Image 1 (cartoon, rainbow, N blue to C red):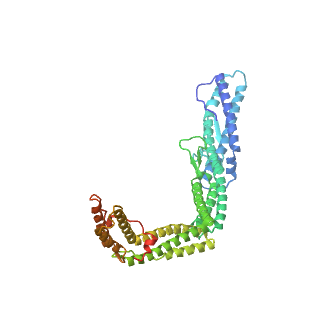
Image 2 (image 1 turned 180 degrees about the vertical axis):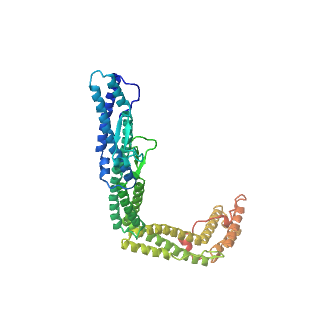
Image 3 (image 1 turned 90 degrees about the vertical axis):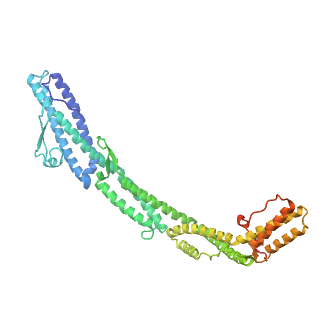
Amino acid sequence: MGDTGADGPVMDRDEVDRALARLGAEHEAIETSLFALQDHAGRRLLEGAELTGTTKERWAAAEASITLLWAYFDAYTDALRSAREIRSRRRFSSREDLAALTELLRGECVTVAGSATATANAPTLAGSGRLSERFSLAGLVDRMNELYASSLDMVVAADAVWSALPARIDLLAAELQRTRQLAHSVGVRPGEHPSGDDLERITRTLTVLRERVVSDPLAYWTPARGSSAPGGGRPDTTAYDREARALEDVRREIDAVLTVRQDAEARLLRLRDVLSRADRTLAEARSARGEVLAKIAASEVPAVSGPPTALQEQLAAASEYRRHAQWHRLSPLLESLEEKAEDELLRARESLTAVTAPLAVRAELRGRLDAYKAKVARHGLAEDPFLIERYDAARRMLWSAPCDLRVAEEAVLRYQRAAAEQLSPRVPEQGGLADRRGPSPSSSDRGDAV
């Protein structure tokens, strides 16, 4: 909208003509702006909406400001018309005409009377105790600029919120409805699953949010810092974004439930296989423990626990959930069972390893004894009486039941030392039982009579 002039002495004809041209251009710009504001979609929506809160208060002030704007513009138009009439009386204006034009163009000669409604709400006359104001044309243009900017700012902000949020809320509500139908099909319902409760809460929140956005759009507007331009800012989508993220979390949960529905049978079969292998391994460990207690003397053999009945009960519950299509309950139970079943299989294997450790040690001693016998034979000492005596003593201990591993190891070491002395004094002796880890015994070792 137009710029203002400044007070001064009586204007000459050229100054008057330039001022009238400038004021005429400002008049056209102001008129165009006012008609644009009048036709603005946001203003029309505000006029027909049932407003509440901040928007209701600000729209009451904006309506009064717009009413005053037209009153100011009419007064401005009348003053400009009067000035043009005085100037058009004669080609070369007289001194009296120039003085009148100077007063009209520069002095506070424009009186604006406001209606009771306008003066009650507009930020111009409200609380001043006056029903009219006097302006210079320049001052009147400044005042119209102020009222226009504040009114346009309010209209543009409300229109921006209405253009952005309700449509996005409607799209999210449509997605919410599709998600609710999908959730219901897989058993995710309110009161039965947390995600079902979340869907109900999101539905209520979006309904209330849309109502508030429509009735009080300015409550969801964030002005731009440091900006004086009308409509500077952006819609506040914090509440909308929070519900959109919550719906996405629910959607991921339902996708997980759908995945469970698709591969539940295969996962249950894998679980049964893992638990079956754990049971077989524990059974083998219990059998091996009896064998160890019979064949190995003076050895501490750990006890072997029974099969995990709790896991079998949970597996049976999972099968029931699948049979009755309770996918929302099956999903977390399967994840827990898969982890526990793997842990159970690992525990069973560790138990078997711990139980059969003495048999592994005996097998390692037997292998070492036979290896030294073969070495002695390669060097032509197989018939050496001393070595035969030491070998037979060690062999009787290792192939007798129950076998005392520590005594048997000492016998093997004595045979090794005797063989080393016969072969070469530089042959190193082997380490003790406590420094050695032998291989696991084969099934044939565990099946020996001794």
